[in-house]
Image (cartoon, rainbow, N blue to C red; front, top):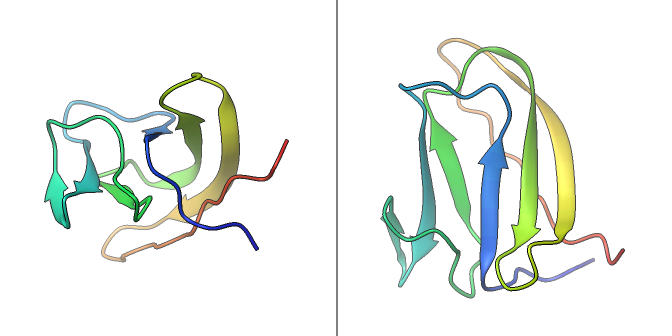
Length: 87
């Protein structure tokens, strides 16, 4: 299993103006910093419902390092781990 990594950029397809992305940086959620700290943690609030893709890019090389499709539902919290796949 891969380990969390620093300098990751999270993105989601079909987000809109009400979608808020964040990363954990310095141990706290931060909406203005664009890359993760060593925890490799981040997420989205108010994502559109339905099957959505979440993407993980290396903030230094801009290469895609992970992707996952998740089902977002109204009134639920969906949590997933996206780890670099080594490719």
